[in-house]
Length: 117
Image (cartoon, rainbow, N blue to C red; front, side):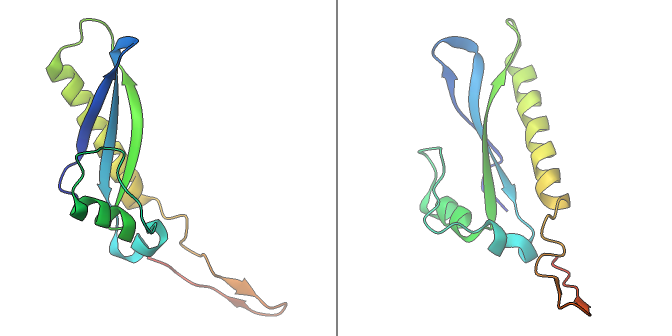
């Protein structure tokens, strides 16, 4: 499980209503090898060695984005917005498996179907 879920990086200097942020999501064990990227590091400079190791091994995955809010949006509303963004991202990582049948083959006569968790 990631140490943090949402990290606000900064507000954009030319738009005080835009926040750059990263989301960290937990990757199901059976798919971690697919997400692994040797040497991966977080966009957030405050990431620990353990955080970066989790990214490199595929135990967690990072998504960066810029969120735009309306002028006058309260801090509580921004927090709720970011929590919702994280939940949608975590749900996507948990429920989407584009590798479900990766590696399935057909030799011209018979299919060999793989099921990847």
